[in-house]
Image (cartoon, rainbow over all chains, first blue to last red; front, side):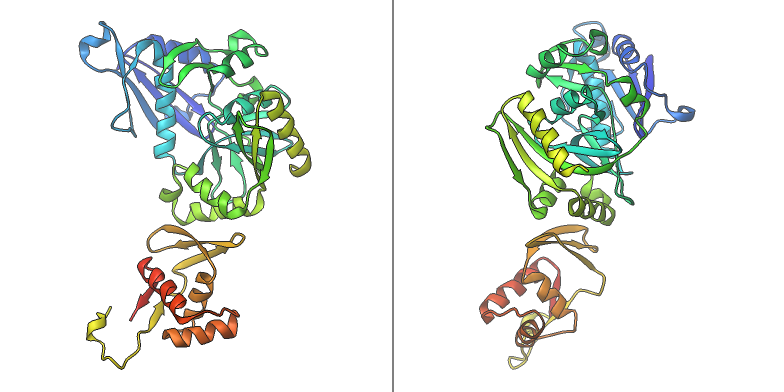
Amino acid sequence: MRHGTALRIGPASFRIASDWRAPIALLDRLYADYPRPEAGFADFTVRLEAKRPWRRWLRPSIHLGGDYMLPDALPLSLAHGLLAAEMGMNLQMALGWRRQLLLHASAVEKDGRALVMTGESGSGKSTLAAMLGERGWRLLGDEFTLLDLDRPGVRGFPRMVSLKNEAIAAMAGEVAGERFGPLLRDTPKGAIRHLVPRRDAIARMDEGALPAVLLYPRFGHAAAVRPLQKSENFMRLTQASTNYVALGERGYAALTRFVDTVPAFGVDYASGAEGLATVERLWAEHGR
Amino acid sequence: MTPPTDRPSDTPVSYRAAAPGATIVTPLDSLYALYDRRSGLTQLVAQPVPAILSALAEGVATPGELQARLERDFAVEGEAGALAARLDELVALGLIERL
């Protein structure tokens, strides 16, 4: 591999190697404020490889490689190199991370306490976190929240926010252009544009928080709030974690403690403004 | 485990709990999380399962003896058929042993 870079996001460090210069140059620009791995050591390696040697020149298509891989990861076009790198880093975390319980959830922090939001793709958890991150909250992460195993804290994984489809225009209206990556059209998830978190979210990425409220947002439904029973919450979080089974008893202990101490609510909302208002109201009632 | 066919017909079936500490039971609400340290599997279970496991932890018991312990300690009442069905499920999950 002739091109490469290395960066750290929260507790995880990555080395990214590429057959092409362009994706690395883009990563270096967008991740300019992120720290480098200590002593050059990286937890994971992601490789953006030419599928065949000649494809580096002719209709280049990227084959994603790394320490942990899904066998059927699709090759992406070179124009989607940034997405390939992001997918590669996410895959390493989802399949290989063992130091904390990994929840497929976004999170934001205020006064040392965290609001965690989990749900399916399209639930709006990423967009809500991005919007809150511009409104006085510190973004901990839009995709993964890391639950400490031996104490009741969460850690952030504030990689770039992956904005999809309608969320792109919504955020473009309130964030300066230089914090955006290029618009990636026609990806497997539609249009995607990456947003660099605010500088303080990056500078404070190693500061954890105490989880205070857990939400299951659902975008596109009439407004409703429903408290979740602990048992339903526990079951859904085991499914929202990629490493719960691998962590064994430590994962069980961390998750039962989280479910026992953090109130959880299902939140349906029809618009971003409505979702934000509901989140702030629930935080005022339960977040302190 | 002794196959049931080897047991004399006048000896009733009895059940044995897993070794102490083999499982962790955590009450959530009306349901309980149950972690099996031997398999690494997590189950969500409802009463009377935690009561059965706790009653059986006293020692090997026949269904009749177990029923008596449940009524004494947990105010759990029920017909023998329902208890037998729960015991079969717990055997299938590997949480108790049929002797």
